[in-house]
Length: 227
Figure 1 (cartoon, rainbow, N blue to C red):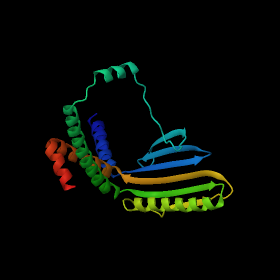
Figure 2 (cartoon, rainbow, N blue to C red):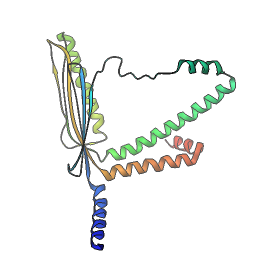
Figure 3 (cartoon, rainbow, N blue to C red):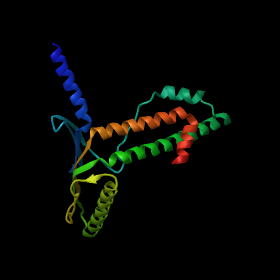
Figure 4 (cartoon, rainbow, N blue to C red):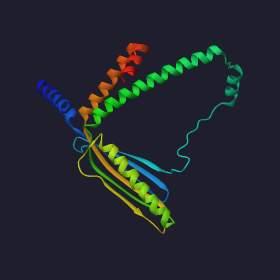
């Protein structure tokens, strides 16, 4: 019985030692066809032994974007309006809170960017393929739009390349459709990173966040000043 427990404990220790060294592979597939958008995310751990898949049902994107709303009790809102009072003291308190929140957000964003940059150095993009077919029904405007899309793609890839590493060159393509009026695109990408780097990034973020909270207002101000 003791041998079994020792073997079990040894196996657990080995797994804990290997776990930070294992890589996570995340594949993101997005495609738009016939004005419908689809998104799939695959996650693989332990050399594919553990797999997760998440599929977002088809959705639509238009000029208004994605809208969210929430129902409210009109009676309660009406009562709140009746009870609410605006005074000079309320305005000063609101301005003080707003100023403090802005400083905290700016400081937290600085911390997040710093930690994210360190983490992204260890992220490798194994594959990036982005194909787009676009047409407006007019040859001239289709040509202009094709050039704009090329510029956007190369700019985004260049920006990403300043933070992550490429295992192979990205494959970009824009196909003009001079006789059609439609937009179709397919994006397929795979990134990988070691779990240990992600754990270290989370720990760093929590430590910096806790330190700033302990410092209170002075801590936030000092961090903002250093930024």
